[in-house]
Image (cartoon, rainbow, N blue to C red; front, top):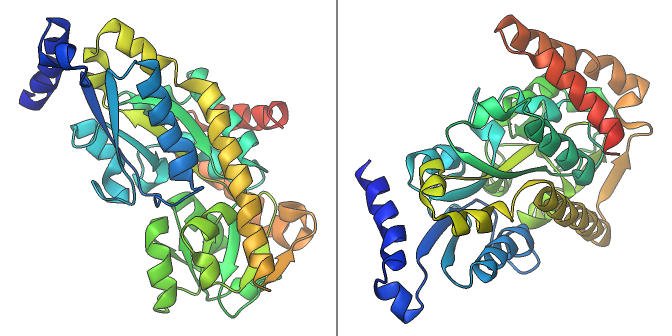
Length: 342
């Protein structure tokens, strides 16, 4: 509470003709924490830094955004809570890293739904805009939602051609939803955030990872994984860029409008474009390195994969319904949006 009052006073001082108004210094400083690496051409540079630069420019310098990439302010699993608590002002994070907090949002992770970041981001942002998942975000102020492109299997020393090839393999999984489908395929899911995957594979703690091509590039997994399996529609991940609600609501009206102008479907689609582009670059890197890449014909509709994966969505939805959540309606709308957003 004390911190919130201090931050609100810091916003109010310039409006009263205080020092920052006279010197041209920023009136509001926002600390933006995320876990992606700050390297040229990355998600950090092309999406999050681009968002920060656009906000600063639109505000005429009255808003400054300080970036904290590579988990330098908050560890990946704690980033959403850190924004709620005011430790960070903004974050871009994976909802599934906060276990059991966003179960309706995570229907987009289910197999057979998403084929690209553009499609997934359109689905997810629409679910929020239509109010179907908005109740999961009352403790922060979401700015925009997006997904990565199709999740792939990246392994070291073993090329997965069929589900039975996954038997016993220790595969990094990002969320509990992805763990379900990996278990159904016979793998041993090992939970960890993306930045921890490189060291875990390097040390032999895991045999492979589930990541899109973008992440194989950005987190350098192509240096270790020499075999890659593309199962179209296997899964995707939900992401959100969100802000501390008290801070947002305490901004002057004109600065709130600056933030509002950099939210919603427009920025969801900008995020998707970055992800789909980086998927191409990540795959090209593996091809150039001479890696084995196996593409399953028909993706999740291939008979060998379909028989195993088809029950996963129904099991997930039924579990949520048993806990009183309207998962069937949300999933049904997600499937409708998948056709609209294609």
